[in-house]
Image (cartoon, rainbow, N blue to C red; front, side):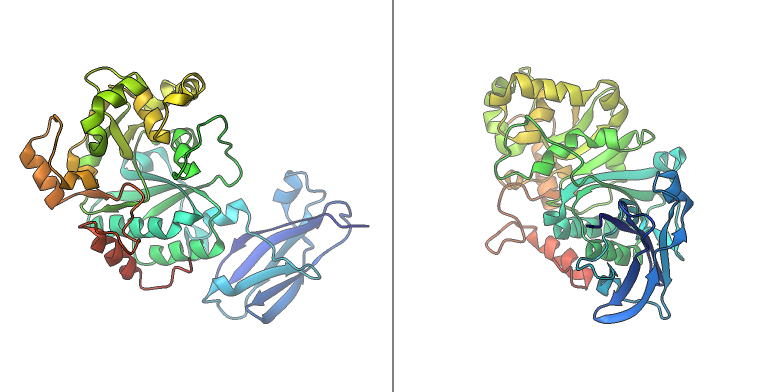
Amino acid sequence: MEFRVNAFIDDITSKYVKGYARVSNSPETKLNIDIYNGPELLGTVTANQYRPDLAAKGMGDGVFGFFFQFQNEIINLSQLKVFIKGFPNPIPLSHEARTLFFIKSNNQKVRNFKESDFDNALNFVFCFDRNFFEHFVVLLVSILEKHKNINKELIFHIVHERLKFEDFLILERLASKYKFNLNLFDITDKVKIQNFPPVGRYAQNLYYKMVFPEILPKAVKKVLYLDIDIIVNEELTELFNTDLKDKYLAAAVEEGLMPQADDQRKRLMLKDDTDYFNAGTMLINLEKWRNDNIKAKIIDFVNKYPYRIIYADQDLLNAIAAGDYIQLHPKYNVQWPNFYERRFKSPFSDDEFRKSKESPAIIHFIGPNKPWHILNRHPFKNLYWKYLNMLNFDLNI
C-alpha cells in the first residue's frame, strides 16, 4: 500500500520544533521524525502525541503530533531540517508557522492586534513575491531608519508569495534591531488573477493591489501602500496625517506621462481636469474603498475595456478613482522625470518641485532601470546601496 502522508511544522524556535505527521490512509501507523542540524542528526521522535487542534480539524483521533526540544540552543535555524524517517523531502512549514515564526518573544506570540492598535499606528502595506524580497528588505530598513524616534508604532502588512524559511530568519534579525510589528498574509497559490490583461514586464503581483483592501483587517481604515522599488528618505507622519476626506486615495502625478495627459484621459475616459497619478505611493481610504466595492468596479472595467489598459494596475486604479483622489506633494513620489524641466500644469509651484528633487521624502525608481542594475545612473541610487550595506549580513538571495 502506498502511504498518503500529511505533515507540517507548526512552530520552530531556537529551542524546539513542533509539528504533526499523519498517514491519512493508515491512521494507525505512527511515523518517526528525524531532526537534523545540517548533516548532524539531533534526534528522532515519534509523531504520536495527542493534539486536540488536529482532532478538531477532523484528523482522526488527533494523535499525530510531535515535539522535539533541542539540548543546545540552535543559533542558525536555516540549517535545521525535519524529515519523516525514510522520506527524502523535509517537512514544510505550515502557514501558521510562516506567519508567527518571527513575531515572538521568549517563544511566545507577541500580540493579537486590537482595533485601537491599528488606529494609533502607522500602517504600511506591501505586495510582492520572493523575487523582490531583497529590495523589500532594503525598503524596510529605509523606513525603520527614518522612524526610529517617533512615538507611534509601525505595522507592516505584507501580502506575499513563496517566501522561504531563510527570509523569515532575515526578518527576525531585523526585529532584533528595530521595533516594528508584522501582519503577514501568505497568498501563495490562493489568488487567481483571471481575465486581466497581460502585464508584460510588470510582475503579476501588481494586480494584488486590487485585493489587499479585502485581506487587511477591517479595523485598518487608512494605509500607505508602497511599491518595492522605493526608498523612504524622510519620516512620514505628515503624509499619514493627510486628510483624505471622502476621496479614495492620495497619490502623486505620473510625471513622465503628464506631457501626454490628454492622451491618457482619452484612453481611460477620464474627465478633462483629471491628472493621471502614479500608483507606487498611495495613501488609501480603505473604508471608502470597501464600501464602494472598488474590486467589482475594476473587474467590470477590465471586462468592458481590456484594450484600453497599457500600464496594468495603474491604469485600472486611475480609471476607477478618476478625479476622486487628492494630489500629493511631489516629494512623496520623486520619479526620474522630476529631474527634468517640468512641462505641465500643477497645483505645486516650480520652487516646490525643485525642493522635492533636492530633498525627496520618497524616491521611486520607476521603469526597468533600477539602482541594483550596474548601468543605472539615478542621482539617489547610492541610498539603495547604503541601506543594503546597513543590513550587514548575507541575504542568501
